[in-house]
Image (tube, rainbow, N blue to C red; front, top):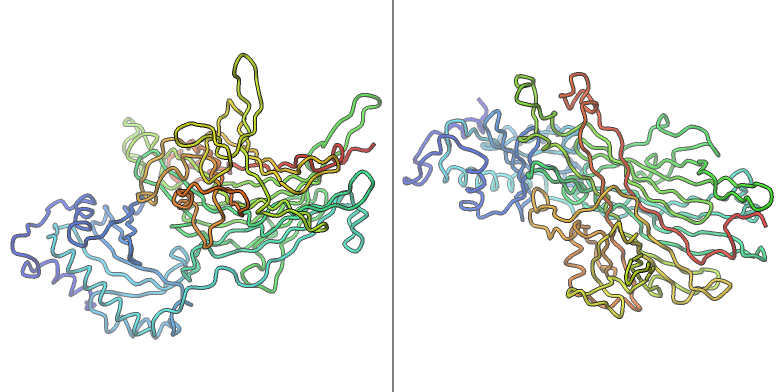
Length: 583
């Protein structure tokens, strides 16, 4: 019998190891364990319900705990990327530890745990547990963990957020006329820089990585055919993929808490030949190579004229997209750059469902690991993006992210008539009084008001002297208002998702999306400052029988089809006339 198992048996069977007044809990439950975490370990935690049981993220430690209700055991564990150790975690090194360890074991984890090194210790709760036993076991687990790290030479510093310069993609429209050596042959063009930053920097294969648009520059011609350009946005990225289930227990911050490793691109997943051939982008940077898809697609009619002869022009777009994995989900990050100057950002969510389908009482006996209540597997998904509007003219060297005003535009019916009004963001202060200047804060999207967020340059003008602007327009099926602080968000201010728009001064250091309420708490004026826009867009997944394969119950035998949420950045006062109109 392994030494750690022998110790486990001793720890659980010998009452002398605990305080004499402790009485074992005969039916030890997750609720009992949670009380001990707080009372005995003095630790707070975030808990999520999964098919394996309840998983606890123990705050201010690197540790997690899994309470498996079926097998009646608790496992404390921590997982590291192989490269985090000062000494390479070879199989010989792992075996050396396991021969000397008393309480724990270490193994090379599967891809499901990030493909790194997992350190763990487990104990049974089937016969009941005394409070002191949990603390004793945790303390021994913690001390032995320190010895394990010493054997491995300690941990290296976290990896950098970015490894190397961004990649560049250029595309002109019409695509058939595009000549990289002579961009003047095309009417419009995009120059897009992208990279794949590491947003959690834990050092494992399950680190959170996303496709980021570092900068997006649009090129067009004025009415005299002179070239113009505008840097529309910088640092546009999906900052969080958030979901909350209706069982009131399960909630995930996939980027900040779970981990979203990038998936290797597959040529079979490229769209069909359309405007031009698609490809997988190659790079000498291993973090970028083979991760991003580039496609060229028809985008419907841009316009149709009917005053004289009926005429029309078809639209085209450049699409950059990538996929990331988080648990049972695949998330599709997509950025469309259109020939008329728009940027369309989308998040698609698709997966094997987390839980088997909940069954009606008359269907009892079917195998399932369903949510505890009927329809508890219904859940909302939110794409949470952050970006900086730039709106600079690089040729004339005017404009930039500190020279924009941020406005909230609403169409309201007052005094018997409609009116479309632009107000400094966030529109009103905490008392409901209109604000005079734009400042840090939050705002709601209102369907009846066609709410739009607008970034307008104070220095870059069109040929008629009107300020150049971009409107942020949501594509959504709903909005949050009463989401709960549960699971990964137990310690979070839920306003981060219960409000649809946030604007802050650009933080000096990286912040996750769920931290935006604390960033905006100062309500500082935005004039003359670089501003970051934070925007969440929600969709709902109400599982159907079709999502669960034959029988309509088993999550592993079906897949949820992709649903999309997103928004459009639409130019305003940019062109001298209707874009791409043949005059």
